[in-house]
Image (cartoon, rainbow, N blue to C red):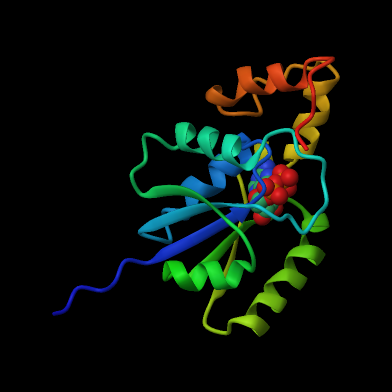
Length: 172
Ligand code: ADP
């Protein structure tokens, strides 16, 4: 019997910064795929003011998943479907927190199917405790001095506090 090719999943996002919700989804994806590529988009479709540069986000992601050889963290430019095809990926993974995520995610999934038929989008729900969590909310709470230690993986906490300290310059 010829061995089957490894099943690769792409988990794309802005990860500014990676939260425990993102981490949960990436690790759950390993139940569906042999290898998961966490892919930081250089150009986000949702315009947000970033607090970490793409390279910094990537460094943090690599620290968070340093224990897991089946998770690789990279960044990409351009169309996600082109990048996914180049990686030999069979699926795109997205997290669904609540109904509010659905409309945007459904639209994206349908568009990506139009662009690249064989690529499937798979939606995973996080642990219930993370279903309220978003990177933007974490950024906001941190900037207002709230305790975000339960919402980000340990390597992210100090850089996040440093970056959101009053008076620290935002990245362009
Ligand atoms: P955010 O929405 O937190 O700003 P991204 O744009 O980086 O983050 O999102 C990347 C993917 O991760 C999206 O599919 C998003 O729905 C998902 N995601 C983000 N936070 C969570 C969470 N707490 N639980 C499950 N999925 C999540």
